[in-house]
Amino acid sequence: MRFSTIAIRAGQPPDPTTGAISFPIYQTSTYVQEEPAKHKGFSYSRTENPTRKALEENIAALEGAFQFANAVRLFSLGESLGTVFSLVNHPARMTHASIPKDVREKTGITDGLLRLSGGCEDVNDLIEDLQQAIEAIKMVDREKNRKEISI
Image 1: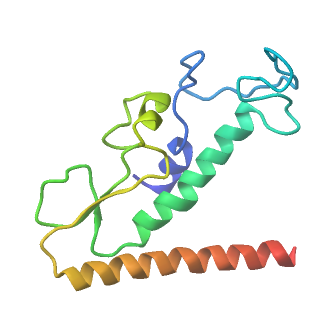
Image 2: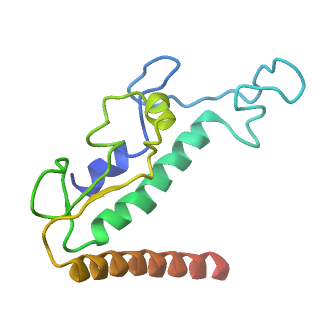
């Protein structure tokens, strides 16, 4: 998938309440609570709301998992785990995309999870590839932090 497709789909499962394919924009500011401080995840929109949470998950999935998947050089992005070549898989968007998000997350398949399948390449080459991908992400994070501090 190209970046523009990933940007639209990453971290955006159908709405669990309505089944809407596009996550709805919640315009309410107040949410019903069973009792004081006992709510269904959202209490007041200034602090958090479903729309903001969906956006945060989308950005987190893009910034984390896809940065790494795009940074590796020997690992290819692919759904199969049965090959002699090393693969990286993003289960939430690939092999398990048809499973509702809440069900996936109960089994540990979060939007930030990547699955690696080591192939027959030299183990030291694979280790170096993973290390350089991690360093590339760290460098992006450091640059992002510098920009945030200077603003």
